[in-house]
Length: 409
Image (cartoon, rainbow, N blue to C red; front, side, top):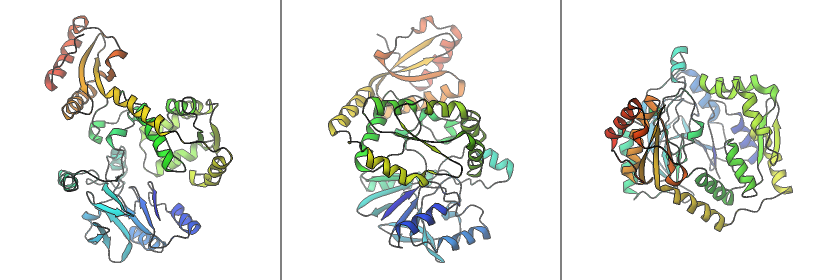
């Protein structure tokens, strides 16, 4: 059995509970997708935690996150071969494995690549408070080269990528936190993708055909589309009002930034209000101390009493085609305070177009000029002649630094 879980941040109660409930053995693999927190303080407390975890009847494979030191930077770790790849391990704790970025492992016949690391949005708060922060949290050039070389050798063919942060095609641009430098986070650009939400809906419906449950973020527009257009049963899980301070404490304990707290705690009523107003979903209100793992039996009951028929392959194909059509013949829309311009984008997936969007998106973000990618027939905008001199000069400077491609027509 191979099981995946998210950040544990040194809290492994749910892992112990899982192993007991399902009777795991050392032959089973539990993958922590970053921020296991096992190498966080780099002192005796880490050793005590490792001793405790070594009693688990399961093999842990930990992906590198941004709230822990890389094993390669700790002299007690050594490299060992494991499932066609290489892992880091301490001889004293042979069941606690740490994946090496760029390795491809054979997990029950699936070729799985690991690319860990991420940018910490709470970096400065951790530095100010004296909490650990690790300069090695993101991929450096050496690791990037190793990853690319390994992919080249594999002819860019793997079944799955395990990472601690979202892959670029699925980046939730709508959920970016205010005040965070996305360029520093390694984001390609701050531009919307005209294929959204069709591309996202298609991935959800495909995942539903493969798994018993699919967890998605609380994007109300996506939820309504799933309900109204595709007849999907959506379980809406959210805390009751009395849990606000408990969730604030949870977020602080796991290292979330002040911007995150402002978004989800200070704006608690608005955020939950939008969920409560959804009349089609099954509402599951979580009480104090409850987590999603505590609701598994309720999920199974809902699935058993009112099973949904998975979307047909034809429906999924139609969504993919609709999303694919948006990738061609789009436009980059730049708008200042007094005018706007439209620039031609022939193919969103073309490397040269992505480089163009990458560079101009960064410059727009730095200077506060609005930018969006839209299908050309979605929007009529003014020509540069109607822009004010100031705005037009700034926009033209952006495009000339990248590649001037004004769309006429």
